[in-house]
Image (cartoon, rainbow, N blue to C red; front, side):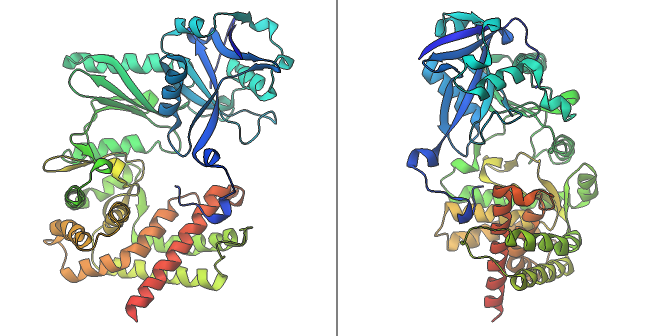
Length: 486
């Protein structure tokens, strides 16, 4: 195939893996590990577009990256590997109509140095000379037409899309530089995109002293900014302090946390420190729980979860019945009803234990925790919540057990580390009761934060399958409780 560029006269874009067996299909190793993205790679702020000319017609370039990972950094790296160019991701592109197959994915990208496109594709054709029948794939032509403004999904949905156009990275980097300069800090030109779409962005900018993170969020995570600001103001020891906020973009700039990610740690001691720091943060949050809820944190207090249980498990009965695969085995209505009753009983027992409601992090994975010499810092508060503090500890503990599957005594040490800051507030009996009951409650609290009441749930196979797996996990925890009682 030969590469060519399209000269565009004008362009106005707007633009868990714990899945069930029923979602798996036979695949080759390559299919299991890789996925393909068609790329709309622009130069000159949309004035040029990279295409390949083949025997059957024009094609957009296609990049292959590992599945189940953030596409933005991988696409940028693959473009640099193939063509020796620096790129930025703008946004994935959802093609309207029937031109695109479900397996086809498109991403809009842009050259960081626009003139480099001439090196990759020295021969250009005029846009006016390109027709639908010029393309080997109709969907490629539809993608180009859409990005040129003939179809604007983001506008028709009424969504705020501040980063949908090809100038978004330039605006972001200019704003970042404006915030750094008063501190005598200067962006050295190095960056890494971790997420990029029309209203979300996560970019790490390097300076001569330390790195700074730009983050912007859209629906459904608009709550993250106000929650982050409340937490940063009240808990500076454990939550990074934003340097600047861009309200129009729902964005903020934060210095990189000190220490290392817990996910890169190979010693249980770092996890023990994280557990103790989590408890310290939660103890400090007791008096601030109403403010955290008012800022937009989720409500996972025990009584609220009890009130949700009947509706949740009624929906899960229907979702379980909708399973079409023979395995894993469906839970019966009787079994689901039993889980519902046990969940409500456990939540009421936790409510009666006298444990105060505190700040929780429903996405407390080791990538969201940084450990330093004497403290841990907690990041990414989109899933901030208020409820029983032991919920978050259980999420941290489950990641710990995956990292150290033969934990034994060090699992007890993790519990002791978390327990330590609570000794002056809670009797040992309340702590032991919470540690016994919280695994079941934690699974339900997590599942209740998913869109389980979506009217189209059973057409969203991955979500429906994941929720069924959550119900099966709760059923297992009920059996564990019964075994201990016996």
